Image 1 (cartoon, one colour):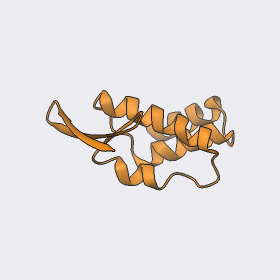
Image 2 (cartoon, helix red, strand yellow):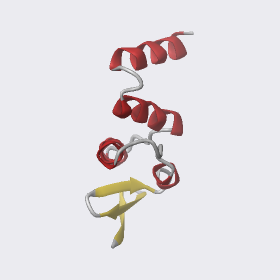
Image 3 (cartoon, helix red, strand yellow):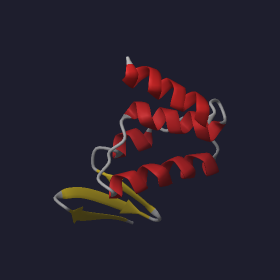
Length: 88
């Protein structure tokens, strides 16, 4: 069952243990198909936590989380990429 909840003027949808901001729903539907169900759940939980705090991850951020969950990148690699992107 999906519930809609309005918090601080934003609309959130809750399904089971997962909560999504209205803008994050499409990105969550398109999670990397190579991830295991456990890895997908980890990514969903991080995104839900960010959404609840009114921090809405972009599709690029979600892809980085997928890379971390799948072991394709280390935390250090992601930090280096973000440093290069934002310090340029």
